[in-house]
Amino acid sequence: MQVLKTTKQDSDSLTQRVYKDLRTAIITGNIAGGTRLVESTLAADMQVSRTPVREALHKLALEGLLYSIPRAGYIVEEMSDFDIQDLFTTRMTIEQIAARLAMEQITKDELKRLALNIKKTDEVLESGLTEKMADLDMAFHGVIYQATRSKTLYQICQTLSDHTLKYRIALIHLPEMAQKTRDGHHKIYEAILSKAPSQVDEAIQSHLQLAKKDIKDLLERKRQEDFISQTFGG
Image (tube, rainbow, N blue to C red; front, side, top):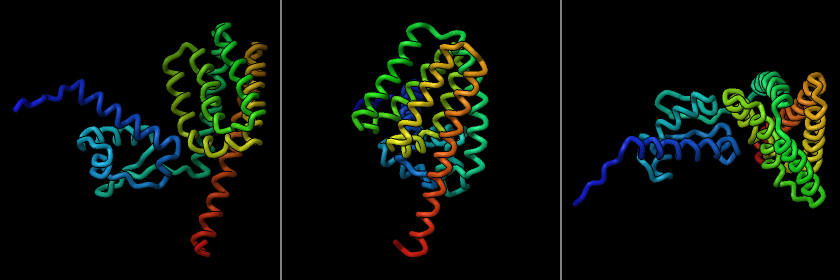
């Protein structure tokens, strides 16, 4: 019987696949905050050995998406009000820097992509198919991150954005939230066209402050619903 050897490249590729699958499930909310992740169970479910799962979980913990409990596994991180405040304070500062840099570097093609994104958003709002808003939201900000021409800044912005994604997905399909997102994007687009740093700062700040408030309101509603469910069993 011929024994197939697993090369380091194969192992790295498998670890990356497991990492990406778990990360996507966490940031989109398919694996809820507070969920306990056990290495052996995940390995069986994903039909892989425990090694790539162990490495993927360790990497996700370093990103702050999980935290480790000795001899118990990992828990998917849940955000407190303080965590949300901290995240958005950091994100606002970083994204203002990114948008200012993008304003100076952005190409005509990238400006067209932003304008097309807003047009598609208007079509989505008119049709009522607001479940497409999350992808449009990520794509809009992605163009700006890319326009910075900074790999480091792109990665930082993307990571900070990912940490709020599951909450944005839970909210952005609501018509009033989708409209606010569209209006915020339009102000950012106009600010970038203006090439006025103060206008860019204001547009980013306004957009992210609204997002922060919506997420805090969502978390408060969830706590109230959990309290009622636990208290009255309904």
